[in-house]
Length: 424
Image (cartoon, rainbow, N blue to C red):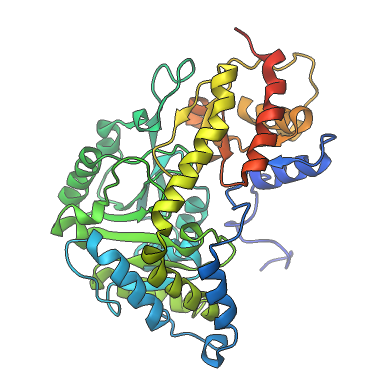
């Protein structure tokens, strides 16, 4: 340990203040209260009653208050296998093709722990979910970034989020003999892009040719507003290379439950299960039971169609104000985030930003200004880019629409206060 027994490990030391802390502290200090929090992607309302009822009932069962099997409760594995078998090349075996994890995030960490040796490279598309980075670095993985490029006129006109594109030549250039995995996210956070079948086939072809494992983060898989394709369903070759990540928290409006899963071929899933066993052994028993019942009942309740319709309606409700203000945005194809381009918003030249915000790109200043002057919290998306590529989104901020309609209406009313700062 040396002379300083309190010295932290390099993997956690030296990290600058994260975006979540900056935004939450700013929100608490804002003179405009109460803040309308459109930043983090937690839901502003409860899960459906058939799911919360199941959770309450599970707490009265002795077996649901004890350890679950490390690979997950049999009822939940079966419910997931039944629900997802139609989306893959062949029926899923709940004992060999499904493993339950403590949220999707721990599932992804387990996948990286299972397959990465120090020095192995992982390709991540920018923008990325920030947890990918630490999860890859923990087992010694090396990150290689490939940007998703916005449409050239995205700062002047509203366009489909599908118009953000990967340059396949850039992807090919990032691959070498050390490349072990690629992380894919569709529907995408924060863009809202749903990768098309053609795009997935192009990515898949590269992965098959180079025998690269695919970690497909599909936690927003029930919230799509355009045809949705799963890369693991495109061919037997891609099924054999793909681990698909899912989330009960995203599916059932319960992000605090931390119930996730990975689906894939036995030769991949068994090693994820082994890593998960060493990370946290097993996951929360009563909430696994409730998630299982949620899957069993969702179809009959018409829940999947209702949740899509409801979230699409919330998207349309919020984006009305950006149409009104003439602020272009990426019209989401899936998920519950929307990126709004605020290049037209002129921040006062004499506005005083704290040093930890002043040193960051323009989107941090926009987010700070929105909190302090408008009373609306958003997330600056350069946090999801490397410094080299942060310029791509420095005029954007991210809004989460998974809030009650009255909250969305309050946000719209406050955002109209931006009008005096907008250049025509």
